[in-house]
Length: 190
Length: 190
Image (cartoon, rainbow over all chains, first blue to last red; front, side, top):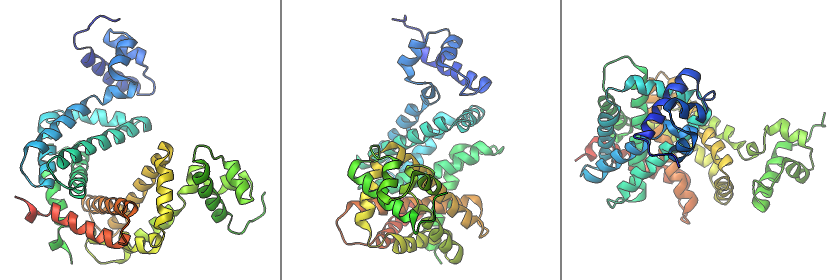
């Protein structure tokens, strides 16, 4: 058994991130990551399962943050999901745009990573839907609110990552939510 | 060169569908499909590329139907996408619920097929967004209208496949679109 290592997870994540940037995802092995972190491969596999996972450990924090707001707010369903994404953006994404950009470009370099990201985001959406269902909402309402909120987040996130403006992700989410409301509202119909 | 075969594509699709139901997707080979259709493997590969593709040739018709309505209607963006899905449902899905159900259960049996389905639906949504962009809409509006319409379609489709009601898919799409409008409209906010 490897001895307990203070913050082994954090060190391995940082090492993986550095190496994926320096050499590319495909060209980096788990052995490289462990060596850079001063740990062994076994410790890596015990904590992450596979190489891809080292880029996705943040998704648990994201899920917890989203579910907490959805569970606690008394806003209407869509507004609850938007509030959750905005709060999560403040807690987790604020002031980290450069890091998020780099992570995004690593993901875009690998179909395997894109697939993992799709699966993670599906699991995240399922957790948000479940949190809405737990408040007594029916399946359709919970699904529509979650999926619409997810659409808003993806559009706002893409804009935030791409643009050089100073707008915060939380503000962009609010802006895009208003656009979605306008586009889908019956009053917008001709 | 194989001689030209009348409706080789249709015969191969029908044979693939039958065999996937009888034996399962994994247990069926391209040689089995070709033999059942009275054709050779080369003809199969020339027309479909791979085994999965035999279940997805309908997606071109779906894309054409959607893009045509979006291009021709003068409705507002979200309504244009909903109108396109409803029209496509009438043209392609009406009266075929049993077949659609069987196809759906084949897809759900295989992660490979689910992945192909995800990719096809991503390509479909990109084509709809492009059709809206070609009408002069900005990227955000086009994306939000397409994604919201896609959410409505997926929820309506899941309900249509699952339920034993006589509601048509086109009617369910209209119903779910109204629910989405209500959930995301500013007037629904507390």
